[in-house]
Image 1 (spheres, rainbow, N blue to C red):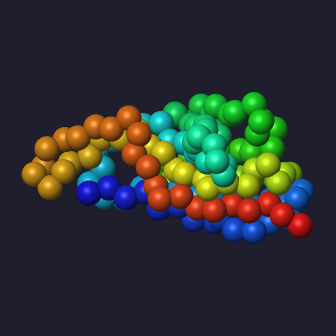
Image 2 (cartoon, one colour; image 1 turned 180 degrees about the horizontal axis):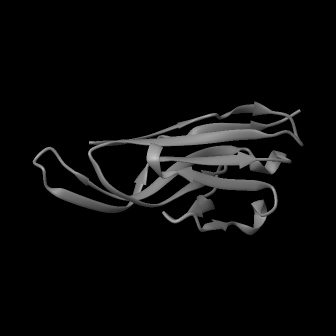
Length: 125
């Protein structure tokens, strides 16, 4: 009933920039905090950045000053601008949203974490 679709991943050289976007679609009733997580090879998924509905951001220490999260509430879309990328940023990036939606029975369902399928970011020379 709801889909989060990420786009913008790819290969970039160290020091380069990349932008990700995630659009939420479906029978959404309310879209609250949205965010980006990443999973490095062999490690657990970790928070990169999140943003509340009113636009307050939160960043992991490792990306502060390099990454910028933003959102467009009219489009149900969250963005991540990544600058000065490092090889250590290589990971699958997942979009996450706290949301409520109507299921096929028109019953409201609220989930703290609704995930996209992920997009791969590779930082390599």
